[in-house]
Length: 300
Image (cartoon, rainbow, N blue to C red; front, side):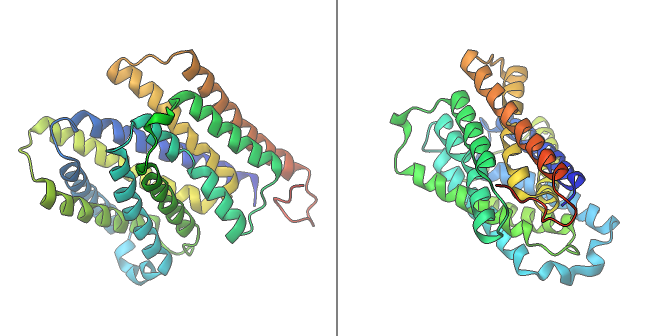
């Protein structure tokens, strides 16, 4: 594993988190007037059209059999299951509590990568990830009174997110990223359509459609770059940079809803940033000190 591979993986993760949070901001702007299932279905329909065009232009459809790999199916299952479980829990939990549970994902992914893929994880990396998680807790500060049985549903969502990311890691090199993103979005769109059958459909105006169009662009960016992140760098190095989504959330909260972070939020943000920087610098130091005949990533 070269330094440039992990660097690209980290960069892809940062772009993915930005794409996801900007998508969330656009969705939040229309969430008061439209049901979630309708938002998912409309946004998903637009995204499917855009991704289909990209796949056609880049020649993805010329080699469709490569998308039949079992890892693609596992990834779709993970994404759809995570969506159902996490959103169901989010409706029943305070948002701070649900967000805190979601930040356990880097820990779950790192642990699973170490157990199943034998990725090297030393005590320094584990410490950095745990400290980063504590920094996130300083930001969201969940109250114990908000945790209930739905917390386990949210943890189920985190588990399936880990399944999605680990399945992404198993995709063959010849599997096109755009094709995987298209199949994933089709699955999520169908899920939104099923929710529409239950919760109904509300009339829409051009402003709402415009927000959802922008959201579809950002969700595509998120999907494409999260796949790239999981396929490029080592999971144990790339995963902690998921915490960057918290920084974007603070910025957008201020810009769109005049939410000014307090001292504890700023302190937690600093912890998150420093742990991410430490993880990257630790990787560079390890690789710089490894002889050419040694195994990359070995850490005591």
